[in-house]
Image (cartoon, rainbow, N blue to C red):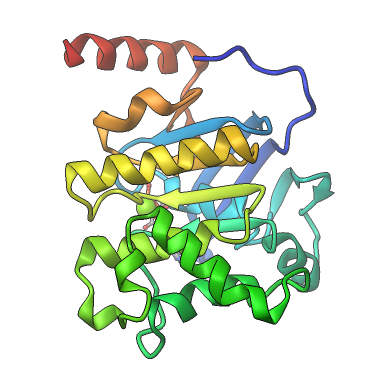
Length: 246
Ligand SMILES: Nc1ncnc2c1ncn2[C@@H]1O[C@H](COP(=O)(O)OP(=O)(O)O)[C@@H](O)[C@H]1O
Ligand SMILES: [Mg+2]
């Protein structure tokens, strides 16, 4: 575990609440969450199913608006932000979801290229090469022209990871990114993410129940019933995990 850096946070939440629906069925999904995340940190988010992890993660990436409280990402206040501002912000964010969300009619290279095409800083003639290089890094050098239907579940997830990483996002969000992978490919993926955090100073926030990868985290946050556990509870959890690993 590293000390909290004194640098300004890249993501900061202050008293954030989020509700789904209205009337009788209104669900209070995030309750008074305050949290600072610093550049280059790897944060692992854990907690029971239905506790609000995915809701929090999508909010951190600008995929949903902030209804109540203050959410600043890369210096932009997102409470009251327009759709355009959210879209602009998302260019700095890479996502890896549980389900890979690949385009089934595009091969691996073209799926990864899509991420580059969103930006205006890449030349057309470089994009295939950059996509291939990233696919090679995730161990798919010999699969660049395969369509998702002809790849295994683990390979598809690695394409999704290459797509999330290729444009070197400042923030990388993963929702159980290793859940569909075997132990070795899971480790490869986590190592890649860690390398990004170190080399590119990418900030990584990952929802996971995979106890084998907790060691990469600078901090483990726990969401329970829409609330963030205290730092003391976090530390107790880490100590329990460490003990059970021996
Ligand atoms: N789009 C939605 N509409 C209504 N309720 C939702 C929606 N998304 C999530 N919820 C509810 O919000 C709570 C938190 O969900 P979620 O963030 O997906 O939890 P987790 O990722 O921890 O399993 C759950 O009770 C879930 O049913
Ligand atoms: Mg979830």
